[in-house]
Length: 215
Ligand SMILES: *[C@@H]1O[C@H](CO)[C@@H](O)[C@H](O)[C@H]1NC(C)=O
Image (cartoon, rainbow, N blue to C red; front, side):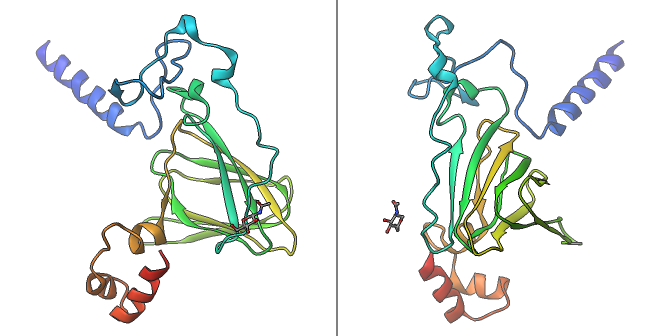
């Protein structure tokens, strides 16, 4: 009998470790109390009696983001920070605007798989598998095409056209998170030591200093 409990315990431990997206809700909704004092995984729930339609709503995703910046893209998020009703629901979305030849640079989402659809323009997209293969899976997408970026993998998009491009993405977390590789590695505060990065990237410290100065 005791051994059954041990096996059950191991199974539960295995399954709880294997869940890579947000856990399932235990109630109809748990609208985030974004300013509340209680710190939990996610946000504490607002009193359900005080919940209103606007807790599940945002507007403005029709408005183009301003992609006039050095990378030529702009992400407009629609996650739990904008829509408190997403708390505990394991889903969110974003609009991405691209200037001609703009790039959404290599990044990962630590908590979400992403599915993207092109609304306007042409996008070159790709993701890289983990070590040791580091295989690049890439494709050129046209309007209406859909592409998936598996959770945690480094991925990017680039507008390969001379006109603006627009994409809508859905993500399997209320709070997918973003780690932009260049910003994390070259723009940490404080800096990672330049000689450490020089050895890591098989280059010299002057090159590292130059890149760090941009982030
Ligand atoms: C977009 O951003 C650029 C650079 O910050 C700025 O010069 C420009 O006025 C902005 N355009 C709009 C429409 O806000």
